[in-house]
Amino acid sequence: MAKKVKEAKVQLTWKEVKRQKFLLISSALFVIYGFLFYYMPLGGWLMAFQNYKPKDGLLGSTFVGLAKFKFLFTDATFLKVMRNTLCMGVLNLVTSFILAIVFAILLNEIKCQWWKKSVQTISYLPHFLSWIIVTGIVHDALSTSGIVNEVLMKLHLISSEITFFADQKYFWGIVAFSNLWKETGWNAIIYLAAITSIDPCLYEAASIDGAGRWQKIKNITLPGIKPTIMILLLMNLGNVLNVGFEVPYLLGNGLVQNVSQTIDIYVLKWGISQNDYSLGTAAGIFKSVISIALIVIANELAKRAGEERLF
Image (cartoon, rainbow, N blue to C red; front, side, top):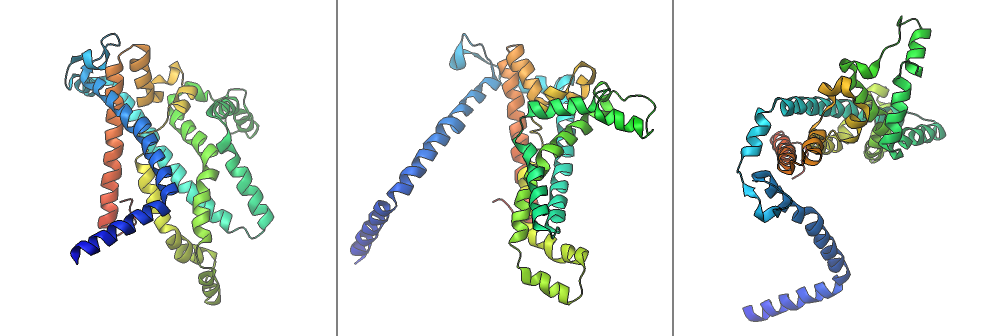
């Protein structure tokens, strides 16, 4: 009897495989692609534990253990780079995350549909511009002869032009503003989608009970999109150290070098410019490990708090 049941299960399994063969083949192609281009390159992490020389190759280079990591944590430049990366990452996370939610809620409150769609379209168009164009616009706007200085002078808020790109105290704010201008509209789309999934009957019932707009936002909209907020927060926490290479590199200069250098720029400097591939790889591994740790810790905290989580 047991043998017949087993044979029936095998036949059912093969029947299901034949029925779903297109999906299985498609999935297999993606698995192969992921293995080739995402997992196999991780073998290059071996360089971080070697005094890697291109002429000796990955298997012929001298093994040095954790020497490269010890150098990183005793290098004053790397510690400064870590500070810059972390500060810019946290600033970008807080400002862009909060503003995207606020913008989505405000946009949802617009009753005129054509105006709402126009504002939404205009707001996410900068997302499709390259960072070269965006940083060029920011440079022009904040230059000594740019529109920002001209407006401030006309309003008599300043007596002389501000050299934004020569003063270190402005740099992190400029980077955060550039990210906000480019990505806020695009980031708000997913929150708008979450808001549209809320049952309209809840808003109608609240109106009957005499609730105003703020009460509806507080008691219906925000609780309705809370799961989406938690999932995106967990995902974005893992990108705190991924400030990016383009923005700090394109906006930075020698005068603000102490606050503009990030881990990615450090990797470029040591790994490519000075041919120390091992040190560059070690810095990259450090960033990846910290990002994974942040996601795991945040996910565990969300789990204990009974909130939505990634896994």
